Image (spheres, rainbow, N blue to C red):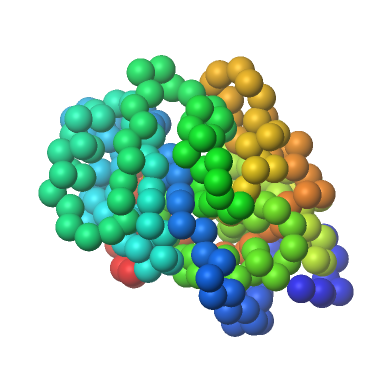
Length: 260
C-alpha cells in the first residue's frame, strides 16, 4: 500500500481506506496463534488472587473466551497458551469448552518473557511461514482477517497492530512512514516521540524467531521488536482495543466494551 503521508508521530484519525482495501488471500491463512497469558496480573488484585488475568470476565465473558472466539472467526485452528499463575484453573476452564480452536497449554514454572515463550516453543511453529502472536490481556473486537490481508499485501515478514494511547510512557512507542514501515520502536520511553503504540497483536514468521536472543527471560518490546525496525510494518487498528492491565481499565471495559 502506498501513501504520501509523512511519518506518523502524533494524534491522527484512523485510516478508513486502509481497513476496507484488502481481502485475505484464500488458502493462505495462518492456522496457529500464540496466546500469551502467563503474566501475574498484580495490578488487577484482588481479582487475580484466585484467577489468572486471562480469565477475568468482561461483562460476564472471560477474556480467554473472547480471544478464542476471535481466533475461531479468523480461521485459526491451533492456539498455544502459556501459563504460570493459576495454571490449573485455566486447564479446568478449557476442559469445559466445545468446538475449536484446539488449545495447547505450555506451563512456565519460571516466566520466560513474551519473546522467551516464542523461542521455547519455536518447534510448534517450525513448519509455519506465518503465525499470530496475541497478548491475552488485550481486549479487542479486531477483525483479524483484515489485518491479515494488510500483512499479505504489505510485503514485509512482520506486521504489528498499532493503536493510539493516552500515556505512551507505559507502551512500546512506534513511528512509521507513509508506507506503514516501522522506523522507530522504543519500549516505555521516558520522552515519547508520539502516541502510536504496539497493541500486543502481531503476525510474524521465522524471521521474528531468529531475532530472539537465547537468554531467558526475554521480552518482545525491549529485546526483539527494536531490532526489527525497517523490517516490519504497522497496522493502525480502528476497532475497540483496551489493555486490561489495571483496575481502572478493567472497570472502564465493563462500561465501554461493545462486544464481539
